[in-house]
Amino acid sequence: MRATLVLVCAASVALQGCDQPTDVTRPVQASAKTDCPTGFNSGSFVTLPAGSFLKGADPLYPEENPSMRLRVEGFSIQSHEVTNDQFAAFVQATGYVTEAETASDSDDPAAGSALFVRDGKAGNGRWVLRKGATWRTPEGKSSTITGKGRHPVVHVTLADARAYAKWAGGRLPTEEEWEYAASTGLPDPANRFSGAVDDAGIPRANHWQGVFPVLDQATDGFSGTAPVACFPADRNGVHDLIGNVWEWTDSPVDDARMIIKGGSWLCAANFCARYRPAARQPQERDFSSNHIGFRIIHDVAAQ
Image (cartoon, rainbow, N blue to C red; front, side, top):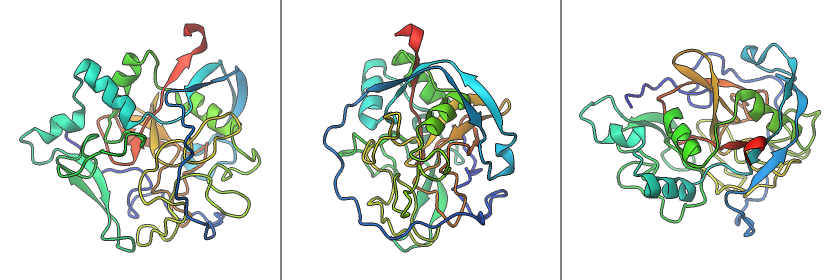
């Protein structure tokens, strides 16, 4: 992959369309999470029946318009993002090499995967394109995922996600399927931010607390990705559709870009606020970073 630092909204304060929303309530201080529930059921799926939903409900940014009611056929969605352990099993079975790994071994000086780095907890964050940042080495060649098998796999492109989904007997959700799952699962359907924070402003998902990109308070207990299913499931029984990592969908914007959904650990109340079901972001197909992952779905008839 020869990547460019044209990053998603949560990436850089210089991007157009990412101005601070005027109606976002900033989360209050919360007790840090120190442990994740131990009853994690890796690879579990939740079946959602056919139904309708309002796509683009209560839009905040122009690209979320127009709002429209759509019907979606039933499907089963993995209850959590695809983990490092799951992706490792795929690689072991198939020998698959990701695009970021291919870039790491290339002679192209412009090749690499995007990495958000900070100089300490209170350090100013910035994006770099780092050769050697891969799903196995998410911070660069000297890093490892040892002890992070339950974290969402990152540094995966659209092609990588599709390859895993095919091997696992599933597929990536369309934007409409993803948004149907996220919107019908909101704790408070009338509050578009309820997947991110509760009524007291305490985080329900892994996102940035503090002033992005200069201060990460990590009051949700995490400064970076969180192990999947650490936060409570939504009303459908699905975890982390909001926050943790952006998720690839199989819905194109044009020949070069696809829609990603859900926001990530970098979404902050003072900036971007795309941790909502209606939020949508175009992303280059061959792009990878340390805040984009994916999950898969199964067609109900195929089960």
